[in-house]
Amino acid sequence: MSAFNQFLMQLINGLNIGSIYALIALGYTMVYGIAKLINFAHGDIIMVGAYISLVLLGTGLPWWLVCLLTIIACAVLGVVMEKVAYKPLRKASRISLLITAIGISYLLENLFQLIFTANPKPYPGFITLPPIVLGSITISSNYYITFIVSVTLMIILNLFVQKTNMGKAMRAVSEDEGAARLMGINVDTTISLTFAIGSALAAIAGILYSNCYSPINPTMGSLPGIKAFIAAVLGGIGSIPGAVLGAFILGMVEAMTKAYISSQFLDSIVFTILILMLILKPAGILGRNVKEKV
Image (cartoon, rainbow, N blue to C red; front, top):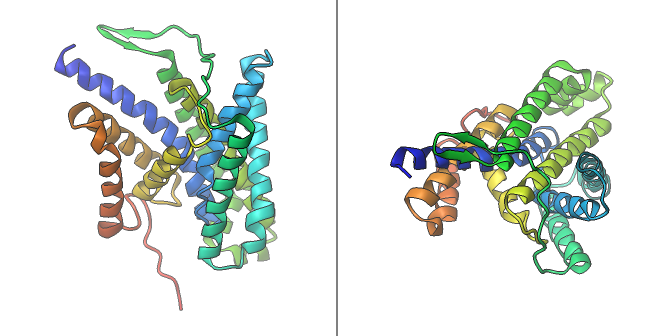
């Protein structure tokens, strides 16, 4: 393979993993933008979605029904998490919420380890579309389906937030929760919907990630979740376009690092980017510097 073709393949790899990071990062950035909460349990929704879809695929259900049921189950889980764990602490300190999120993350990982054991389980690839051949480059169906689904969902989400009444309510709560209540917006319902949408996107990411990177295990969501959080910070946490931009940048950095430097330095470079961003531009590429009044 020529150097140019190798470079193109790495671009494709970067778009693939970046698409998955974007779906996860959108959940982080939406929850933070509205509830001012960094939900570190969000990455484990990927794992939950992977295992639920694995079980459902084993029953012989059609793939579209498996995906739909998995999305619904994860959306419900996201709402339950918010109602049971986060809502009672909404007026508590940020550190209390952060510790709770980490606790839920470990709870989900250990619960699924008890149910399914810690042994990795192969994930049956159900995407059987033919690959795309561009000269000497062959693009797997997993790759282009992941990219198409991710970009489509990002566009739909952005239109939802900008054009619908619920989307406007989300933006209002994000700007000023107190003023939103005075305007008659049901803040609790808006926050719950945000968790449901974020968890649904994470479920889709879990299915797509498992198709590309089988097998699955109870801790599979930890590292992608952290990297998606880094992508959200990179692009500007709280910004939907920023989360997408940060995810694709991070995906490209990972792909090029693996190809031209060394996979051993992959995580080091990713976390170095996070540190540099927090030092040089804490608000992120598309984030806004917000000054709080005393």
